[in-house]
Image (tube, rainbow, N blue to C red; front, side):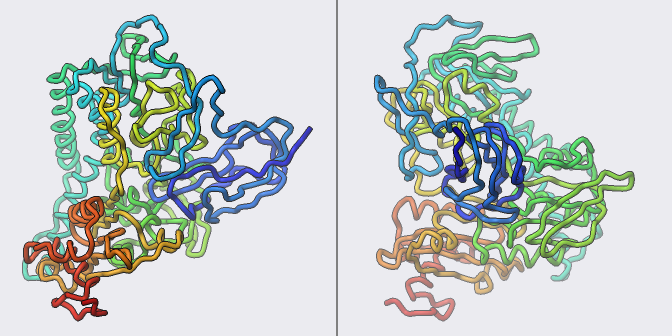
Length: 595
């Protein structure tokens, strides 16, 4: 007997009002179970929502560009199949574990099916480990090293030739090396306004690339040395679970079976793609391709105005490319408050060829003389020809790429692996950390999760329960935020007060000719404690740490304002913002006297 199902947006963590960037079906289409229906995009990741069952699409409740949240109805599906629950219920004979996405430790617990304990007998493989770690990114190598320090015999599996994962090899580190080059180029140009003029720089792209690679080699080589010192056995190859206590690893010497007492999944995420574009054309690149620095294209389009896209835009703009950015939402960097993004937008709008908001790319045609791109939306131009197109629409977790079902590990609709505050999955002896367990997909989150997992395995009482995880965009100017944003406060109905200090009143900012910055604090109107902070300006990423510590320590505005900051520095803008909140500031006229 057929039934009509309301297919809804699943649990997407703390994100609200997420954009629909692709709709794969239309009314009347027949879909299979697990077939992708739509793609949603946050500032850090793109995610596909699969169909819970096979059936026929009867009605679409959303369209491209709509904003949705958890529970929003996507479509009505007529199905004759029984619809499975998103997560299986625990059998009566075994207690259900309670888990919650690690990125949102305060969410209600999610029940998942309990699995057999690790003590169930199994035959040891070619290699046996007390602890095996799958993936050697920042979270993975941290977990492996911490477990080894705590006396465990550890095997670390990595598919690439060097340790460090995406972050060290094709992500965080090489991008910051290139951003440093961009900063020097821009500062050399801008200082001409103050009486010092340099000749136009000569760009030796091969030397820049070699320098970037040397930075990577120093870090990854250091990790290899640390692994050796700790007696962590490194196995290079691609691994998938073959049972709850074993992995099959495809190595250059053939398949090897690695068995384990406990495992930590740190398999990360992959670049997200919008379907339908000619990706076989090498002129369409992702962030990994952009970091290879093959050339400096004359005209370059960045699809996606989030952190990754705008960082790469900063690099290629400084090297001489004419940059255009297209973003579906009504602002760049949708995860940040608009007042934090405005100074960045104002600055790059003067440098870039174009910024198209509320606009999307509908077609890319590979031609001999370039990539012809067709747009649609409020600010859509006529079709344009570009030498390169950078796809920067986020990342997807690798939860479905590791054979998790063979181990009985639950993978949710988005490809994430749910865990509890100990980083334990529904299988008691298997843990998971990093991008694969939930947003935000950030290396510094993964590092702390990795330590927690290792310590729990070693018998310590540990839990991942941060009050906040800071985010940083290493653009020019940088944007950093932590805790509650104004957008979240308004959406969630949380009472707050705001205190902002403009860098135009900062002696340090004026002396380096970068007075466009702002330091903003959000506070509880009753307790005066800090709730959140946002900073836009030079070195914002370095400055946000003080606000993170203030939140973790429960500091109020008086605590921050009375803390003596060195003068003249950009760091004192945090103290000034707190004084603005308290009405005690003397460097500006306080908007309202508190005491």
